[in-house]
Length: 140
Image (tube, rainbow, N blue to C red):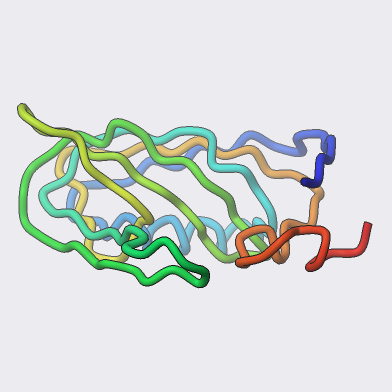
């Protein structure tokens, strides 16, 4: 385990429009605003399609199953990290009967709007999402 305390530099709010590809739009917002490292705190909105992946094996490195489809749904939440400019976000969708989600992939089209809140920080999250013990990946 590794524990670090970091101050928040900026709170960043992004609002996405109907028809936007959610992941591409987040990437564009991060690039245009030179956000290197951030914590994705929350996200809400609605979509007409979904695209995500989930782990599908219990060994490291795990296999992934990719799920994609057309189905209107609400975004219940988005969270994750921006790691050296790279988006590592997870998303939860919900319709009238079920909630579902996983690691956000390209192909999620915004229906009405989507809003994302992130906290920009001076931290180096490099290797945080790499398989293995953090002690073996990063110097203490």
